[in-house]
Amino acid sequence: MTHAKPDAPVLRLTNTLTRSKEVFAPLDAANVRMYVCGPTVYDFAHIGNARPVIVFDVLFRLLRHVYGADHVTYVRNITDVDDKINARALRDHPGLPLNDAIALVTRTTADQFHKDVATLGNLPPTHEPRATQHIAGMVSMIETLIARGHAYVAATEEGGEVLFDTGSMPTYGQLSKRNLDDQLAGARIAVDAHKKNPGDFVLWKLSSPEEPGWDSPWGRGRPGWHIECSVMSKAHLGEVFDIHGGGLDLIFPHHENEIAQSCCAHGTSVMANYWMHNGFVQVEGRKMSKSDGNFFTIHDLLHTEVFGGRTWPGEVLRLAMLMTHYREPIDFSVRKLEEAENILTRWYRMLDQAGDVAPSTVSADLVAALADDLDTGAAVKVLQGLFSSSRLGDLVLGESALGWDFYQPESAAVALASAQFLGLMQQKPEAWLRGGDQSEQQAIAALVAERLAFLEAKNFAEADRLRGELTAMGVLLKDGKDPATGQRTTTWEVKR
Image (cartoon, rainbow, N blue to C red; front, top):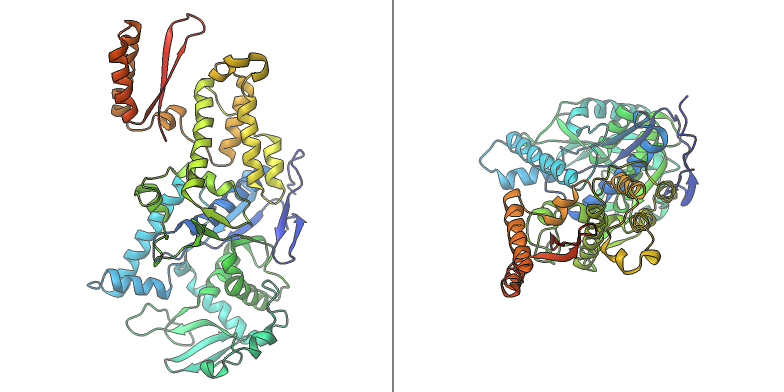
C-alpha cells in the first residue's frame, strides 16, 4: 500500500457534497483518481473554460507531489457528440456530408483546445477519453438502469427516447441541495407530458437519417450529455473514485444527473467522495456574452489584439487565474492581466540577474498553502516572498541592493522550482525579458552596444538619440557599472 510521502502536509479540500472543508483520504493511495469534465468541442474554448483546466491542473500537480507521479490518475473527457456540434457542422460546412463535417469540426476544435491549454502551462491528463469511444458502454448502462427500474422508454413526437426516472431515486438532489418536490410543484407538466416527472432527463434519443447515430435496443440514436461522463469515468476510474471536478455551472443538472445515473446503475451511495467546483469568470465586471462584446476565447487572448489592444502570454493568463482562490468569482480584466505580467517580469528580471540558476526543491510553505483547499492566492504570495528572499539582505546592502547584483543561489533555485510547480516561469529569462525572435534581439543588442560606445566616447547627443529610438521600440534600458571593473554597463528588456 502506497501512502503519502512522510513529509507531505495534510490535504484539505472543500467538498461541495457536504459543503465543508474535509481532510482528503483517497480510497487507494496507490491510485488516487480524479475526473474533471472537459470541453464540448463545437467551438474554441473561452477564458471561462480555461479556469477549471488550470485549477485542476494545479490539484493534479499537488496530488502527484504528495502521492507520487505514478500513483495519480487524472481523467478529463472530450465531448464529441452533441447537438451543438451538429449545428456548428451544418453552419460551417454545408457542402459536406454531416458526419464528415462533424469530424472536421471536432478534430479542428479539439486540436486547438490542446494547443491553447498547453500554452497556459497545463500538463496533459492521464487519460482523455472521447464520448464517441464509449457508446457501447452508454447503451449497456442505460439497459442496466431500465432493468433496475430507474429509466423508461417514453413516446415523443419524434419517436421513442429513454429517460431517467428522477422519482425512483430518493436521494436525488443531494449535490445541488434541490428538493425534487419543489421542482415538481413549480414545473409545467403539460410541456413534458411524456415524462413521469418534469425533472426526468434524456439518456438516449433517436436520430434522424441526417443526424449521427448508433444502433441500440431503442432504435438508431445518440446519447444524452450526462450519461457520457458516468460511463467514461467508470471505464477509467471505477464505479466510485476520489475527486470529481468542474465549474459551478455544472453542479445542476450535469453533476447531479451523473450521480443519479452512476449510483443507480452500480448500486452505490456515492459516485465520487469529493466534489470540487471553481467559481465563475466575469470579464471587466460583466458576465461574458457575445452580444455584449466581452466574450473571448483563449486563442483570441493569446494571438489577437482584442483585449486591451494587445496579445497576452499564456503565463500571464495563468497567473491572473491563480491569484484568486478557485472557489471565488474572478473578474478577468486588463488591469488584472497587467498586474500579473508585472509580477512575472519582476521575477524573470531577478532570475536573469541571479545568473544560471537551476530549479531545486519546491518550497514547503508553497505546498502547505496549496494543501489548504488549493489556496493558489496564498501560494502566489509565498512565491513573491521567495523571489524577494533570493536577494541578500536589502537593509544591509542599502542602495546597492536595488541593482539586484547580489543573490543567494540556493534561494533563487527554490523560488524557480516553486514557480515551475505552479506551471509558471517555464521560459529562459532572456526570452521573457527581451522578447521577439532571434534576429530582433540581435538588432536591439547591436543598438544597445552602439549607444554604449557613444557614451564611452562622451557623444551624449548620439547616445540620447539611440535611447529614444530604443524606447520607441519598447526597449527599457538600465545603465550601471560592473562591480568588478567599474566599467559602464547597460542591460535591456522589451517592455511588456
